[in-house]
Amino acid sequence: MREFFKRVVFCVAVCLVSPLGLSERAARLLLKRDVWFRSHGQLLGLIPGKTGWYLRNAYYWMTLKSCPPDCCFAFGSAFTHSSAIVGHRVYIGVYSRVGLASLGDDALIGDNVHILSGKHQHSFADRERRIWDQPQLFTRIYVGSNCWVGTNSVVMDNIGDNSVIGASSVVTRPIPDNMIAAGNPARFLRPRPGEVRELEPESSMLALVD
View 1 (cartoon, rainbow, N blue to C red):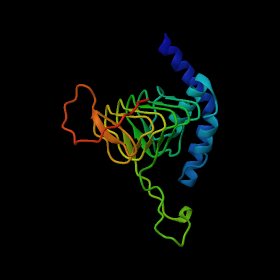
View 2 (spheres, one colour):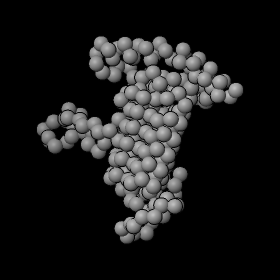
View 3 (cartoon, rainbow, N blue to C red):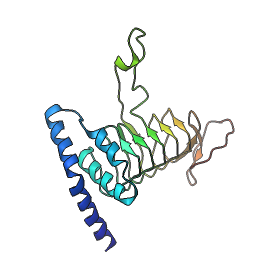
View 4 (cartoon, helix red, strand yellow):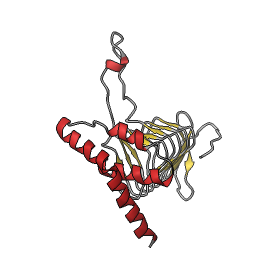
């Protein structure tokens, strides 16, 4: 009965956001690019409570490359690229931003997390031109299934399945499966319990996983 009720509420949410979703999809067909996608996402991000959860999920179900109806996008969260792919039961925390990324099933993204579109979004090689005017390079970032990315982290490289990233970490190199990592830049601390793996010696550090 509970699942049936959720489906009914989701259908109502789709009806409510359909003017936004359909207008964005129609504009893309004409202009071959995102038009109001970011603006719509920012607007819907301001709606509090479960109402906002359902409306955001419904809108991104209509406009992302892939987004199932069983996700939760908290207050203030938003996507910046419609080519993002979201797996089942993904949670994205308060004020988090997701760029060109693929999020695996059951990924848990904490508050104020920024998943960028790779390490080299902005070129700055030409001193004679503004950075704003120089070429941009977007690279898809993969966050594996059943990952936990702690609060205030910045992700610029891939994270393997079942891995945990400590709060306030900066991921600048790939994180393997089943690994706990933290720091700036993020370093491997240890495998998750049950995973046997040889690690390179690391200097001692304390990390709180949010």
